[in-house]
Every structure is written in C-alpha cells, then in structure tokens.
Length: 172
Image 1: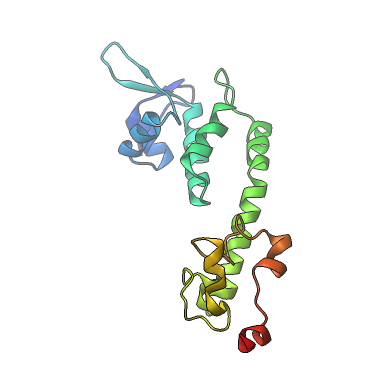
Image 2 (image 1 turned 180 degrees about the vertical axis):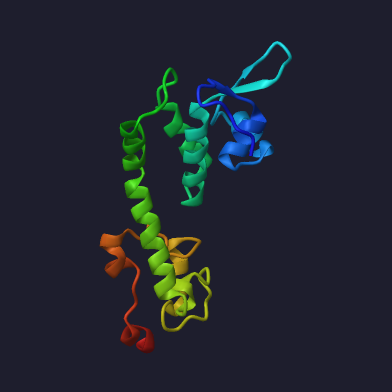
C-alpha cells in the first residue's frame, strides 16, 4: 500500500481508491453523480480533499444497507463543505434514516416469516392462492406483494388489511 503523508491535504484518485478500498471507476461514478467532488490540477488531474475518505466510507456503508444513491446524495449535501464532517454531523444524518431502516427491517422480517406462504402473497396476486388470497382479493388492491410491502400495508394496519383468516379462506 502506498503511504500517504499524514499531513497531505489532498489525495490523487489512485490514493483515494487505495485508501478507501473502492475502485477508481467507482470514484469517478460517485463524482459524476455528485456524491464527492474533486478539483483539477493544471495538468487536469483530479485531487480529492482528505474528507473524501470519510464520505466514500459513508457512501459504501449506506449502499450496503440499501440506501438509494439519491438519498445518500441529499444527505451528503447537508454536510459542511468547508470542513471535515464531525461525529455529530454523521449522527444527524444517520438518525434521519432510522425510520426508513426500521421499515426495511420490518419488510425483511415479513418476507422471512411469509416466505413459505406464497411469499406473503408476493405471488403477485396469483389467482390460485386459496389460503392467503382467495379469489385474488389482494389483486384488487393493486400490483405487487401487498402483505409484505410496508408502504402498502403499514405495520399498524397489517392485522387488518394484510391477513386472511384460514377459516374465511376455506369458506370462500
């Protein structure tokens, strides 16, 4: 690994890639999407501020937990450009995602728990689901896995809108 001086204020794209563990092409992509910025030298070479290391780490972590790039970009836009973000800056950003992450966790739990039951009627309204979806009732509500998607069936309504009693299904 190339040793970068601890007091170097800027990194080349190769140094940033090596230090962050991200491919140069990914850094170029992040820059094209406005997630990170660089300046150009007189020789048209990219130079990144050292704070780019933290930003790239943040981007990679956010991607791993499923945060869309647009949301990541919006979050990074709230960070100060004139200084390295602090722990408080990062805490504020991650707190804003807590509800979304809780929702994703709930969706994954529903998927896991209903995986053997037509994937929670994720059979996309298959008309032959006599237990969980008699007469394709969930198809009347629209496309998609109606019982799993917490946007379509919020947790507080899950018992009402997203469940079918086996007795009711048998009588239908």
